[in-house]
Image 1 (cartoon, rainbow, N blue to C red):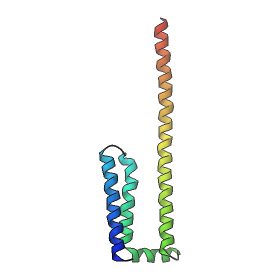
Image 2: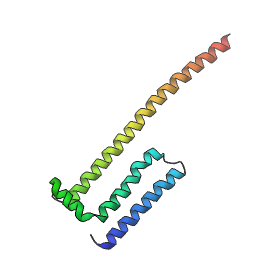
Image 3: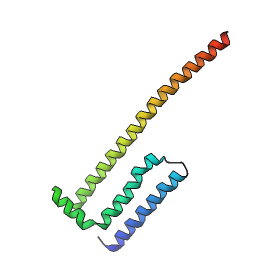
Image 4: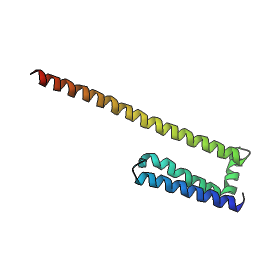
Length: 116
């Protein structure tokens, strides 16, 4: 890979990393959710800096080309993101059910107080 491409990719990943940090700082993104997005630029920078080692790893695993390894790693990353989002949605659903039940109990209590 040409040096200019490596520099461009590294600068782009640093910008993405800083963008995530700014969103966390302004409370637009939860730190728990931001961690996976902070790992992505770090991983890409490491991959760019160690391309020869990645090529050796791909051959060791039995993957013929580096691009296929990177595609596979991107696919695994997306699966992790989907799992993380599913986990968050599940927790939120439980909280919504609890809040709905508590609200119903409070409304019933208010109605009972009004009747008395």
